[in-house]
Length: 225
Length: 204
Image (cartoon, rainbow over all chains, first blue to last red; front, top):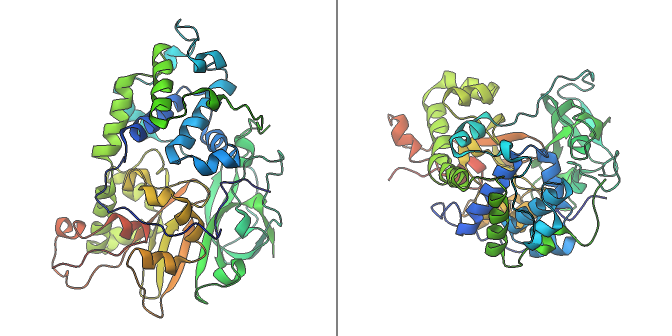
């Protein structure tokens, strides 16, 4: 099983109601603050991107569904700050210490923002795991979409594409494996591929016989067809 | 271990979202863990400096320069980095080309992955449950809600951004744009045309 965030293909969500192209980047001022507080806290270096995605995904299904986008970010962040010992529960209640924090020397300063954002955080790493598939080869995704290292843990194979037959479209190189990296188990880099699936392999009633869906999938999510 | 305790720390913050953000910002600032001026800088970056105008420049150049387009489709990351477009959420770029036979569309069903250095922060609809749920299963119905109808013989390829690779759609150059400069072309390139939920503007 995966979690509530894994909603690809789900029925019942209704129309999309897209905003106009010239709508403000941040609909509310607090959305902008939420994004900025989250990014700035990330630069304290106490977690990685996979840990922070998982923090949002493991909100209770009830919270995940009722929270707006940036409320999920804020809640995930509050949980991470406490779980990683950056803040205490007492701090969140508003009664914590005011003394300088041991991590204060890691604080992202205004003058460092531009360089920090421009530097990014690439996910490619050298790996000694041999590339098992070549472009054009048929593969099948693992039958259950699930983290194989931690039950209920983070994974990037959506349920809708589990147990499906596709074809290798391209090799992206070797990248950090989120299933491991989200749980402090190391980066465990391995080959990752774009895999193309006919829509008819994924859906009971595809819209068009030639439609396709492409997913980026790690080698350990795949078996030879 | 996944933490599934039911008294999540976030429940201790004020329930109202704007107050919740303010509370966290205040606590972190008081402890010297975040610099409010750095927050202003981050916001200014994504509100005013990094946005779809970057991607539009890449598309206009690809429409104008066949060698650039070939290099872009072959290995986009260094090509767009040469134009100054690299950074957070754009470390591994792939550009996919629309043709009369195939239309491309990008989604992130699991969260909200999006090519920040080229398009900025994703719009609300891109992060909505409805788009995330439906884009992979019924892209044509989704496109219709954006006012886009594809030709009968055009197939749709939806890219679900499940890893750290970020996708940009290279839309087809509109008719009636012969002889236009890159600057003139860039004005025609909409954000949605680079996500694949729209088409470029047609010159009036």
